[in-house]
Image 1 (cartoon, rainbow, N blue to C red):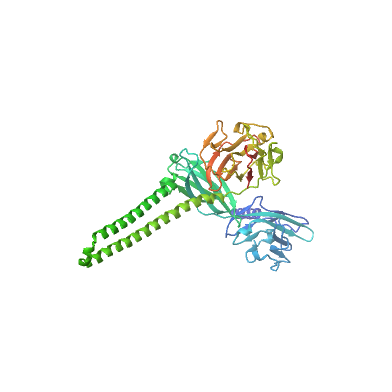
Image 2: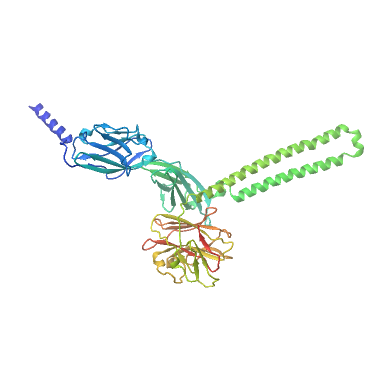
Length: 504
């Protein structure tokens, strides 16, 4: 009797765990995951799709295809078998059904996943009386390269360095984290993401840091549990890398050695000819031969020394250029936004070009406060980069930066361009150099012949940075750019001379 009770309970439990299969209804719906299905490159993945209510799907037509590509199928089941002829060649030999059509399971198995497999898939099922379809989103994760870290001296002094972290080959967007030796996260770094021709992301970050704050810094890039990490000692370039001063010093020493060897060669040649008088030439023929051979040996040694020194100098030059090229490559990481000027915001003393890319002062103006013009573009989120041709060799003054929506409502009014009035700008005046619109203004040193200014705005982190775009050297950063509506416009002032500002 006891065994009979146990058997009954087992039968009831088995019945509860087996899906109830009903006869084919007149209508049905499809059940698919609410969110995207994540998988890794070169792996296998199942795109889930089931009938509701559950019933035998063997008599039905089951079609899997990419969105808006109904006729080119990834898989087509019809007339009780897989139809190979209509399959997209990209999926041939890589797709199959789960094998439980009789239980209403229409899931698609995709093997050897590629980057091209990313995107939306449609599960389409039809009977003689009814049909339904549902969309499944597939996301393919790709782990990128190890982060590459570098250190450069930051413009503006203060003992800070500009630490750069970059990595490429990610999908989708990874998370980048800076930490110090204690494991504490550093949150004021700037992050940029760019996409290559394959749709893979390159991620870069710049961080201003004081070398005394930590023994080392780490940059970690992570995606769905996978991560890449690199560390660096945040030392100034003179401590671990060749700087221009160190290179010039080495070059001076090498040149000094060369000229010293040349001087010794000339001195030995002259003293040797003095010792050989006319009367000694006949009596000491053998000595003459020996004396003539010595300068030749010294000349050979000198030639070898010069070649060696030239090779050493060339090596250091290549190293120095390589360091410069690393900075230049930063410019390629910025995704430039197309900025146009809004003529309606220009002051009557200014003229905006027809292409909305240039603005200049109609005639020389000696007003105490600069007039400005705003961009037609407005920004409220994300990361934006643009470049302005300022040509400091020709222009006497200019102002470039961002302003808030509230400040834009001032329109053609004349106000001081400072944060208290909703303006964060960098300004230049010939003879006085550069400063930023803090209150009072903060001056800093920069290239007096600056041609192109790069402006980077991180709306989410409320950071505004300025760069010498041609050399990718960081000039200055505002860390507290804020707005009540979190909406910003680019702002430009050509100053008081007639030379134009030009947006690139």
